[in-house]
Image 1 (cartoon, rainbow, N blue to C red):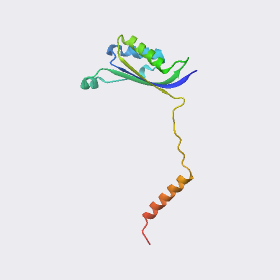
Image 2: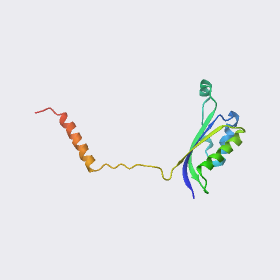
Image 3: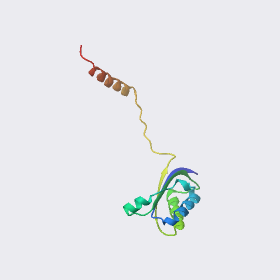
Image 4: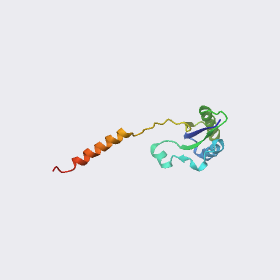
Length: 129
C-alpha cells in the first residue's frame, strides 16, 4: 500500500564540505531534488554565530509498509553516513491523503442576515426626507 506524504527535512550543522554529498545521498534515498535544497547563507551564520543549516520539502509516497518513524530514522542514518559525523536531522511528515478539513456552508438564513445588514447600511447613508 502506498501512502502520500509531504516530507520536510531540516539538517543542522552539517560539515560544509559534505553538503553536496548529503544532497546526493538524499536524492538517492527518496529522490529529494538536489537543486531544491535551501541553505543558511554565510552572512547569517557569521552575524548570528551559528552553523550551517539545510532544508528541503517534497511530496511523495511511502511504500511497502514503510512508516513515518522508520523513514525518518533511515533518512537520518543516510545523512550521518554522507556527513561522516553526527548532525541534527529533523523530519516533519504530513499525511496528505486524508487531511483534516472543515466545511462551511452559507445557507439562506445567512443570506437573509447579510441582506438585512446591507439594507441597514444603505438606509443609514441616505438623508431623511
